[in-house]
Amino acid sequence: MAMLEIKDLCVNYGVIKALKGITFEVNEGEVIALIGANGAGKTTTLHTITGLLNARSGSIVLDGKDITKTPAHKIVKMGIAHVPEGRRIFQNLTVLDNIRLGAFTRKDKDGIAQDVEKVYKLFPRLEERKNQVAGTLSGGEQQMLAMGRALMSKPRIVVMDEPSMGLSPILVSEIFDIIQSIRQQGTTVLLVEQNAKKALSIADRAYVLETGKIVLSGKASDLINDESVKKAYLGE
Amino acid sequence: MAFLETLINGISLGSIYAVIALGYTLVYGIAKMLNFAHGDVIMVGGYAVFTAMVTWNWSPWLAMLFAIVVCTLLGITIEKVAYKPLRKASSLSVLITAIGVSYFLQNMALLIFKEKPKVFTSVVNIPKISLFDGKVVIKGETTAAIITSVVIVVALSIFINHTQKGRAMLAVSEDKDAAQLMGINVNSTISLTFAIGSGLAAVAGMLLCSSYPTLTNTTGAMPGIKAFVAAVFGGIGSIPGAMIGGILIGVIEILGRAYISPQLADAIVFAVLILVLMIKPTGILGKKINEKV
Image (spheres, rainbow over the protein chains, first blue to last red):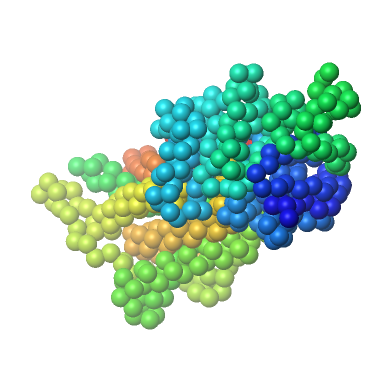
């Protein structure tokens, strides 16, 4: 059984159909990439999984449990953390406060302290800037903070929305290296990216979204050589 | 010496405004709405103390506790019934609803307590202080207002910056969606904010009615509006801003009344609001507002 199963998911914004019945699954330990153009429904998919949007029909099942109607604030505790598009860090709070807010649902003080150290190990720059107000960080550092904050809830699945957006090529590579090390530590990753090439290079499997539908799916290593994918998304 | 006494009275009135302004600023910061019914919760607090002390003969401490409980529950109820269904509505709808709640509370009070003003018995039992051979006399009510507001600001700052619930409030005030992704229940955080704001309004009601002991159904309206001015003056959304704004407005009002004209005192307060909005729209300690459209 898959860890996360999305079945016939439909989501509307008013009268506009953003998702027209998508079905996919995420197995434990995988990195899954959702790729597609702007407006294809990638962000909508992630928002519906973590409860920020309501599904019109269809289901989201985590470990055999239906979480379609579970409100966003309860999803974190069930093991899904969300790194939102545009980082959405708390600009007026310090870096450390942001990291600690990631552990909001946890009560184990010692465990939290240990995990703060783990986050610092993964992102040494966050430790250097721990007392700085988060809004003063650079774009790359803010992205690292958003990722570190998400890891603080000890998620089993992290969903990431455009983590490379607006970053320099060096930072993009750095972010993708970190995603790989997050996976190596046993966390499953569901990744939404416009940078399809990078996403396919680290993913196990991928789904291609087009105007609210999945039009293609398969092994990432196959898709990266697929002619239609190359043409539409890899710019080759 | 008369000036010093006037100044202290101004600081005292300003402290009461500060306590009311804290309620405005907290609710604005977290629910992003102006709760214009906030002033009327003060009036409800006043009547609650009056009823408990005069009608039921309770001790002042018990009456104060009763008023805080009544106002806290009232605040939570108002939010649930009137504002929560409008969470996704335009801010104009929320504003009109808040004004509606304000009139509702005023008229309910009129229905229950009738139009004849009640004479409030002070809940303060602090002796007056004489300075400079009795040239400056500070009333117990004056001292009580100042001490209470300082204690409230300190306690509130500690609560917000050093407790889990307080951090949740900060997170919700910045980004509701991101806060939910941290596992924060936005609805219960907003509810808590209304509870705190309304509890503070009860305290303000007692202090106000102890210093100015006539109680009618519109007692809360004017102080409510002036405290709103104070909150904007200090920078709406900012806790220290509410404190500074409140005290400044109180001092301006009392000094204006004493040295310029008693009739113009209120006009001066509002002129200050207009000036602030022209020169620094975000107020003294206000942050730059990045409102999403």
